[in-house]
Image 1 (tube, one colour):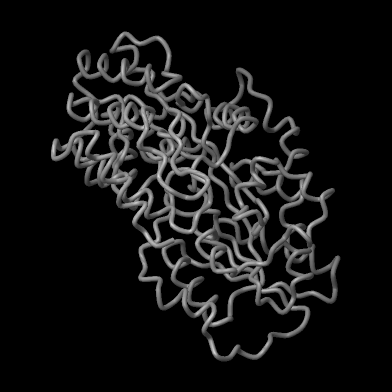
Image 2 (spheres, one colour):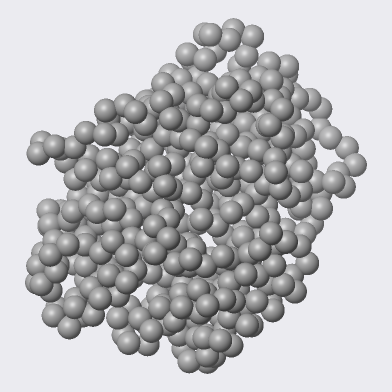
Amino acid sequence: MQHSIGISVKQWGIRLVLGGVLGGLVSCASAPPPQDEGTVEFWTMQLQPQFTEYFNDLIADYEAQHPDTQIDWVDVPWSAMEAKMLASVSAKTAPDVANLNPTFSALLAGRNAWLNLDDRVPDTVRQQYLANIWDASRFEGQSFGIPWYITTRITIYNRQLFEAAGIDRPPATYTELAQIAKKVKSETGKYAFFVTVVPDDSGEVLESLVQMGVRLVDDSGNAAFNSPEGKAAFEYWVNLYREGLIPRDVLTQGHQRAIELYQAGELALLTSGPQFFQTIANNAPDIAAVSEAAPQITGDTGKIAVAVMNLVIPRDTDNPEEAIAFALFLTDPDNQLAFSKAANTLPSTVETLQDEYFKTANDDTTQIDDARVISAEQLQRAEVLVPPMSDANELQRIIYDNLQAAMLEEKTVEEALSDAETEWNSLSR
């Protein structure tokens, strides 16, 4: 899925010409009239109509507890959120609370668009959230967001194809994944997996570099990936491509292509979120019947990637206290448990994760239940592997462009890494 509940599938790419819009954050001559005192405008990303009843009930509950506050809920399509948010922040008409993610919100954190929450949210409240997940919404030493719902990728694998290839268990590491790729191709003629290197699509390959021990940037923001670990990681993906062990269209097709191939029975495994089991059941019941869940594939570091959705409060809000209070209500342990059950996501609060809902799987549970437990178990060592930075999309583009060139033998791995390093360090940041 490519909307907000599918955040583990696709990273946002910032595909807009930002100069004029971002410049407006500091150059707008006048601000619009303030909104009504006590009204909190709240934006979400593509949560209607599936969760309309949930949010209507939640808002009614909040307003009953806070009779002086009115919540105006606006649901924005996934594809429109970037442009709409950029324009509203520039025009000083942004909502009081917005549902974004660290990758995109860090772009605007670098322009001082959000409230610094460190002095506004007490430590006792911050400690309710997983520390590694709270830190995903920090930029240059300041907290700019409150974590909400999260996902960790899992491996969904086709048991039937594994058996046909003589494979008795899913891969736990990228080393094992390469071995399985050879067996699946030689024994079945199919591919083990599909991972895109289209620059503005999934960040899975970029995250895999970190899992393999690559440091992307140093403390000054300069390239750190041109290293022995970076060379080994580039060679890993280049060799898989040149040996014909991943499809050729990984260069041109996004993660959606992986979904299509898996549902058609042409891939042995897929990396996605637990909620995707329902999609497979709807679209390809025969494939769903032979699909199982396994933990996320990682490298020697053992690091697990997590995708986070957060809530940010614009610096120009007229109602900062009311906005923060509503954001904390929305993300408190009880409400996170309710939303996790409704959306099949994971919570960012420590107490909620202790609920049996995230711990119990037995012979009577469904594939989705098993996947949820596996996903939740990974959270203790999960982290946002690409740290919030104002130009993370450019880093991914540069690395993917040069990785593609190495795959196509237009550059050696050494040349690709060197060129990527030069281009990244030449950016004005």
